Length: 258
Ligand SMILES: [Zn+2]
Ligand SMILES: [Zn+2]
Image 1 (cartoon, rainbow, N blue to C red):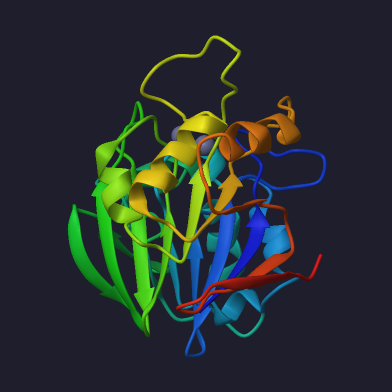
Image 2 (image 1 turned 30 degrees about the vertical axis):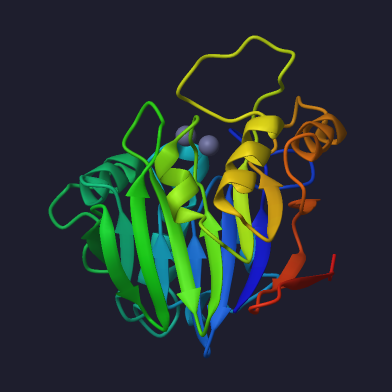
């Protein structure tokens, strides 16, 4: 499977990146993980947005879901009529929240364009992917996701503080895309986000092959985040940046298309 970083900015868009958005492709199926502010514009550089087959929203903070509003416009009102409904996976209440975000009457809200499917911890199938989702540690209900395809494993943390469930989701992952929003040396609230060293610790405990740090907040020093993670994780580490493409196989490798 192939992962393309569309947006890796944490909490709000940065000068060179939209907020969270990742494109995962396998067997000609396109799954978008999160659609934060600014993501829909950048997504068009990497795929035809009408060839997206499913969207997954890890949680309902603006920096992970607000561009679904723009995507609703793009699918509902194009020349030639509405595009076919596609599934949107998200936490309980996702349909109502997205309707409210756009200012739509909740009935039908966006339901004629998106088939909303509410997440619950456990296993599911999305296109060619064998998927497991689990609750992670964030002030609102939030999910981490593990995607398996032909023996390769990609795990995405979404937003989370320290969390045993995240270690299980990332167990032996070929690529662990993990948030690292905080710095060790700054005061920060508990049960919200990870520091670079905490992301590294989770990757180390999980036995992940590679760690890609994301949700990089514009006011942070990314090199500091990388240093923190290198102190706790023995494997290869990269910083997620828009345009980076990772070909994930049983033995993960990557190349930079940016
Ligand atoms: Zn976030
Ligand atoms: Zn969040």
